[in-house]
Length: 291
Image (cartoon, rainbow, N blue to C red):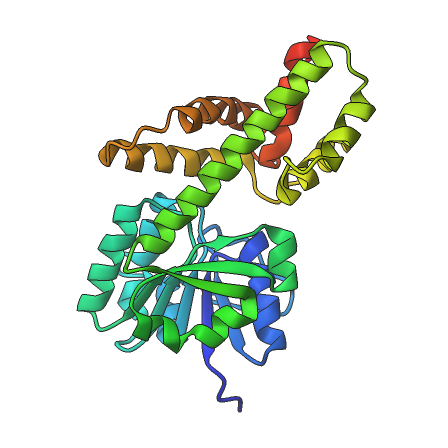
């Protein structure tokens, strides 16, 4: 019987299942629980409750959409915290409010757990390649316990600071990512409105250095009209909302990011489960006066 640590995944969607595949290749044992009861890759063992999963696991890695889903899987008689033994490690890769991450650390520490907020930078291609950037908040001791896990799912671990700092850094990154895509989409909208040829416009933007590699990938998809979800609009808009709420608490003015959030809110309303780059389609439809 293998003595490799058992990593229990709470949530096993597009990102987590790819992390799980890389961990399995590296020799780790994995199991999973999904709040929806859906999911599975045909080879991963699924348990009926988060508590049952946590009771078996050495490390629990949570990957759920938002604060509400996190609370639903962690707390209560069948939650992770009811099953994870003292000395266990709880890694939360979900993007949540910073104060939620801090409260989880306090609760976990009181139970004798090692808690790390570790959202990741990167989408499904990076997750599949094991090329994510792990943004870790927590103690150096906690991170050292799972550094090999992070090295397996990512190419770099950034220790952002104490509990909550990984989440704060993630919001910085996603705020920049969402806001700059909104600016690129507005530039495309202007170009199309003035009559620039569509293919030429997209190809030209793919060549210039002011557009990031990430956004060039989104431009290619937008040119083809392919908005397959690598990062769904509903999650990007949620992250922008979390950022603006946290910024308001800190009295940090973010006018450009606030404006971009409005465009991403419209994108979420029209294309909630498509990639957030569907904002290009929203802007194009406005200037082309089409549905």
